[in-house]
Image (cartoon, rainbow, N blue to C red; front, side, top):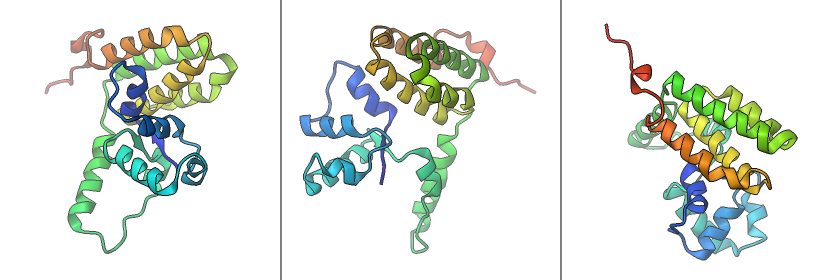
Length: 184
């Protein structure tokens, strides 16, 4: 099983406020959307790793990649309430986002990717360009932010740009009337 950091997981490293123990942060740091549990097992004892992974997932620091979530099959013996919750979560994940906000955030991400990540940011840029909903946008922001933090050129600008992105998503930069739904 492969996990990736959620926005909350990335924020654990981006902010100065620590909420996890040292071991939990170590596991979170190594979760990258590519390493599976067997790979992580090389660094940690299996029982400790599984407990930590369960905690990180239940508290929203990590998640299965979106492709795995879509392929995840609910067993036939699952309770109706679990199925209902799963369907609600899927509907909630694909929440519509104001097209102006989406375009603005994508513009910030693409411009910074071109400026700071260059050739190394090609795959991230492709993902950003294909974002159509808030869930995929937040996943792109997470990947982009980690790449920026790891880049020599982008490291210094990452915090400022993340603040710009958060302000845009919260509606503090874009005029809220441009995102209002038409009333009939």
